[in-house]
Length: 394
Ligand code: ATP
Ligand code: MG
Image (cartoon, rainbow, N blue to C red):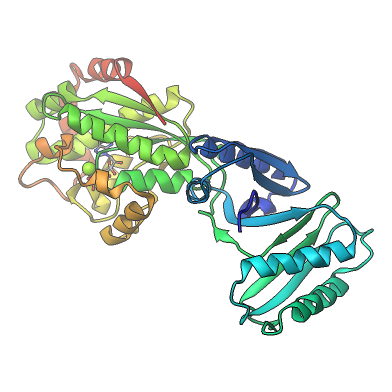
């Protein structure tokens, strides 16, 4: 059966009271954005608490489903047959024809779930359930009713200006539409964890920008391109990402020259956070996002996280903080970032990494080491922020 219309069901945004229309409008906007990435032409409309997608002409069903399954805020996508009210006889015929086409093998159980929001319709919901059920039983001798666990739940919605018939619900990604919850800055490396972190925060409706610390010539153009590619993969869910590429080489070399090598990673990470926060402030972001997970590496012990966090004034969102590596990998595989993340290009942190990094840094000691940087560091940070290159990833 070829469908031309889809009913979009949303979950959480349904409970936002008076602000509900803001959420619906954001969802419509995100659906339109996702559909622009497909071949077909579609109309997206909002009608009395319902969002519909209608295909105008040919389209690829699989491609459409994939695009909609990347739109946060969608709980389910229901391919729907929409008819006009031409009396009960016509409705009964259309419902029987729907079952005929949808269920090749009629040895199934079903239940009719009729809803009537048009209170002028001559039959109420109970009558519709009973009468339509009977029509179906009459038409297909092998079919059975099961009101508890039907194979097919047949929804018939009598609305003011249209009648919807549907039985299938393809799950969406859940979450909230991007744009309903402010904006945050993702520290995006070429690894597995940070793209997943960005995805998870975008899923809560947060728009994201990203910052990448690049250290040429220690890190190559290929490593940078990999991060651009990752930002593009994340943008399929989050919408366009402004990726700020910061040249971090001079700062890294300066830290390497002036500070104890076992503290390098921690001090470097503290400067990454400071710079990311500075760019975040300039771009209206209200928080930072990292892919940190407790205990994963020396710089992610609770003590290290505390030392890194101490330089931030903005909230830092660490959505994978309690995940095991495998749990993060599972999400990366699901969202399609894993393959790119595991490409073996060098990372700016690994090049300057010490053989025995501190795992329990003492903030006072770290601050004392950072005083060795006083002469030049402020100016270097200013230059790093000012010379950041911005790449629009979509
Ligand atoms: P990932 O897989 O995300 O790279 P990781 O396990 O390699 O994480 P770290 O290298 O300690 O862990 O980085 C922790 C977090 O710091 C990353 O998830 C990311 O948010 C941020 N980060 C690390 N390196 C960079 C970088 N070069 N540019 C931007 N952010 C970075
Ligand atoms: Mg990394």
